[in-house]
Length: 142
Image (cartoon, rainbow, N blue to C red; front, side):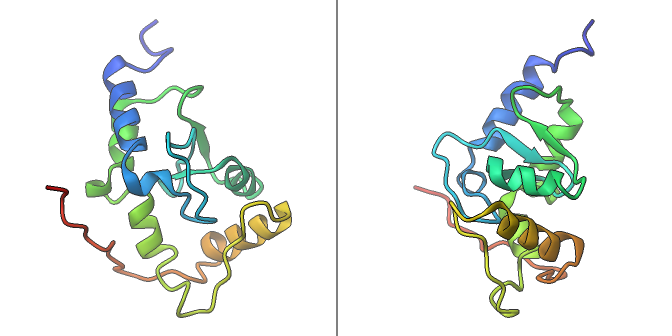
């Protein structure tokens, strides 16, 4: 039935949001994916690399796949920057105090435990949380 897969509208919208420049850099380890990530940590409204997805799942943070999961338009809307979702907002709020707190991000290629440790600190213990943090605004390209 129609509920079994996402509407074409939701699919198209999800792909647009996924391809926004800020969402092509994993907010946790800063890995870049020029095509956009397939994993979303829905709990924190971020597009993430597969290593960080595993780390989030290790703490039962709800994750979804861009291609394999069903999405509603309402869910996709929550990922939009103007609704507080996306990687730029996450970096400004959940990771907003990382420099101030001397936080160390996991490095791409490091052991999984470093990723899990970081996810635990950042999201479970809110170690780098900055209330009211705002993403740096970038001037629209001419």
